[in-house]
Length: 308
Image (cartoon, one colour):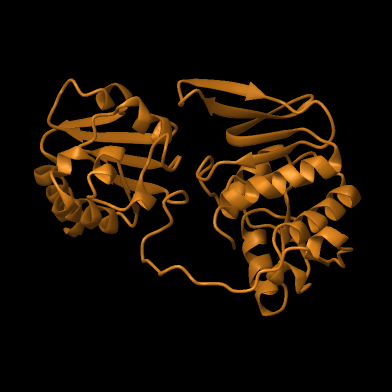
């Protein structure tokens, strides 16, 4: 199942039986359908049209538009990735509906779904509701912890009527990203981030070791990235990536507002810092006053020790 969809189905179950659209067909369709059913989907829409593999975004919008018009759902939930936001915006325009992006939680009232958003550098939470048309909502990764709820489902194969715009931009080549054993930063349920307290690029070795022990991703503060200690792709913050994992461990990070804006919606925050007055402790659920280069290896060693 594509990353994030287990969480999306879990959140959708609060509002009723979710339906799933899986673009790829052929041999992959059966496995994807089984995974969707494992997380509560009652209907799985499948199309094996080649347009999905060779063209950008528009074919997916055509498929979703067709399904929404036929099924009249209470809302359309889409993962809040770069592609997801583009798809959602195009779909909302087609449906003449309202759009809400980057929801961190979803509620329900008599008028329909209510989205909770984190705004102004995560300093405030606001609730928003679409008042016209079918709500189209993008949901941030890890907004909901995935919880299996096996159910019987039906598979419906659809024939998509593609618009002329669907084939105007063709993908001519693909270059796979170098594979990593660690999860994608924005999708990870656990993130260990290092900051200025690492003291240099070698200090990130203890961050990586702990992340691997926890099967999590590695993040970095802007200070560490600007110093050249870790790649920019791992920067968490207002000018980096926005994350919302189940567990965020900030090691050697002071907690400046720029960094907090990127991780403040994490479910549990653990801070390790030598400065007891560091702002990160105001945000943390748990704090350790100490040197990350000493504390993190002890935690990694403890995780590697079998318990009885």
